[in-house]
Image 1: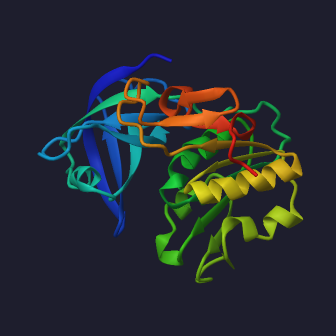
Image 2: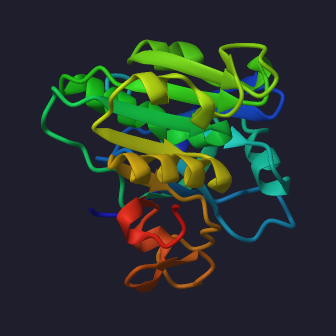
Length: 258
């Protein structure tokens, strides 16, 4: 897929949590085609100590509004500077980068999308894409507490949402792999993104159950084009750059699911 270097205009910066904001960006020209699971490298302007672009998952593409959504976790100086952007500001991005999720073509299949923390970001675009072609995906979303759950209304418009919280403040108490839906339901495919321990647990469950599973890795991706080697991941076929060979991998390609 062709890559673009674009200056996009911020249409909205919405603080959805103390540690997260949702940036919406647009262009005078139609946005390029993007696939769920791909990401953008965003240049951070106005931060003297931030030299490298920041890799951000494509959260959603609103084709009707010609808008790109980016869910930003305020994790360091770079992302905190991005969160200060206002409507009308311009951001420079390279996109779309990486390989996304595989989209099945048998709508009778049952699909489960599992996310935790900022890892829910690519699952909204995936869920919307699946809905558009006839699926009704199930979402399983985990967080520490009800206050840490993100974009629930957006997910509910695209499928059925199940929730776990570590403190039991909403949904079932525990981690996503403790949720009863995994033991009472049947799924043909699982997609997951979030903290690596969570993804490893989901991948292990899928492997034991014989379910096809794809994970979106969140390795540090400084360049996005396979030049810096910051994001190397060990696979069954050797070491590869996550930014070019992923960030989405089938668990059969990886060495760490158990």
